[in-house]
Image (cartoon, rainbow, N blue to C red):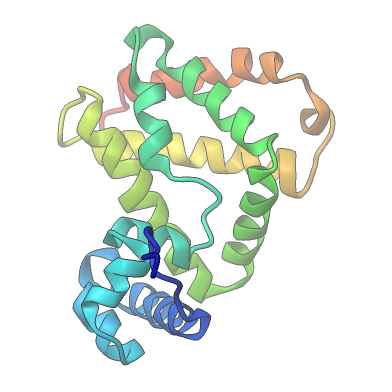
Length: 199
């Protein structure tokens, strides 16, 4: 008998049950409050089976969001290099992703987040735990200012995605990528490194 190697075939119903339990747990308790053990219990499976299908909690969260990409793989590329070019690199990477096939899934997520409070909670947790925390941990900025700075960056990029890809306001919707990088990059740079208003 020849023994097969690799991941054993899984039951799609089990995978779907885990994803359904994960979506509920993440929406109700947030990323930090949801545990693999509780999700497994809710799905009626052993925690080891959750790890078998999805690996880590991060990967399970991304799957439950139908996220088209893993920020953990992209953000280090953006953060590498001269800090003076961070804003332009971030906008370049952002537009490259949204102009790719992954952008279609991003548009769907953004539309859902706007129309559904349940999806909005998931999307908010995704942005905070998978994107903003990673940036705050890697970019040198005063800890007391970091949450506001990265939230301002998120607001700029979310607005750009909404206007260019969802409501498609011209001429921004069809503007060349390099024009937007040159226009928006310095604003991102100021949000990250510039002086904040005293309040």
